[in-house]
Image (cartoon, rainbow over the protein chains, first blue to last red):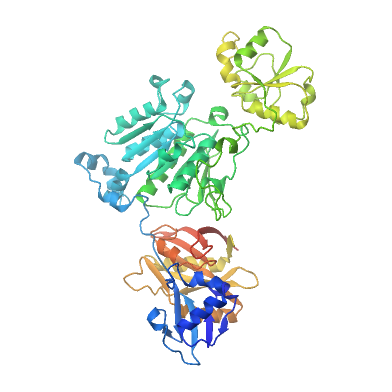
Length: 486
Length: 141
């Protein structure tokens, strides 16, 4: 008996196209194949021992795939064909909202009027608007990106919006975080987010979560929701959100901004890549400044956040093409929009073939994101702003090194500091006196740690100290009389 | 496991033309790779055997037609690298049914077709019979 193996299945049969066997029936042939090629068994049969739906067995032209035809004897000269049925169907429901939840939604007259401009769109219509109302969305971060996202989700009619943010509104937030106003200063950001959503639509179920995202609370915060929109500004939160969302099976609409540039993408959606596929590890702490340190032009988060909200609505309604497996980069200074491919990585520790991360808890985020000082490394000593102010007042001998960039010093200079931007430190370390205490300062006290580590690596032996919290922490106690402000 | 597939410009154009013309029906075909170069050099558009009432949302390649085609292709030094099919007005993602029917190690190209032309184009591969699905980058060579 001659058995033909389709080219598509040959890998499991030692790359053979034709096999010779003494077997007299389909049943015997299958048993013989199982013995000869144990690897092939899993391809031919499912875990219940049933022939897989895509495997077809022919004797000559006759389809003998169903089990009741397996016992029938085969004629000596017939050829048996082992072939695949290449088949498939369209994705059932493009929306991330289950159909039963959509069907449970109803609208009153006011809502028909309010959402009229959605209802008249063929691609949204009543069906789409019901999905929007049924949706339960978590917005992580009520800052600049969150401002745009929260307002548009509320205006579009998303039924449940949960906003997570631990922070209070500060004056410097008002340059770009447009849901907060001068009247909100020192209030929790989630409180002004709640006010704005209430003013848009009282029918929305708003949930405020005035807490910091940590490994032990993230799952409770997002589990059971349809979508998470990542509007955070730091690596620890991004990895936490990504990991928890993947493990809970929730897609993430990711957005980030820096100075004049932004990026948007979707993670964990329909076998698409996750944040770890794109960024397996964070950069060293302090190397990439957050917006609080690096700055960003005011309308940029509005642009990026609006695209995030638009992606979120498309996932909810189930229309259009979206950014899963793609990353949109926006350069607002030179107006370049680029769409780059983003691949799911087989080696990904979270969503790859052999994942090592099985839970949010068993991964040390502080350590991973460089927020914990490694024990073997010599700890960095530092002064509080008060201690440094006292040393300056006592005229203690010391060198103060300002590692900020020139445009940052233009806002506020530090008196009597020598200026060495971080990139030039190793080259210019002979300008420092190893016999004297040297204090490194930057805006928030992170880059100065990086500066000290850089010099240590370069072999500098003198005593080095960090200004804890940076110039931001110091300005209230010493700059009021210096006239150093612009 | 492969993570990129290159398709010649001619073959690529032929796929798109076939799928575009079939809209609003699903269409399918076979990708034939030159054994020497490892590039998909030609394609064979296949009839969608899913049946008139199912063709808008399903596809099926007749196994015997595949058998004839692959034996003929082998004689020309070609082999089956994978399959392509379209999702009219739907995303270029794998449906539950698509995944269920995937042969491990074989390349599947899914193209979203729209009223106005071609949407997303994606490639996928499954590692093991009940395993995970990975995206595969497609290069026009």
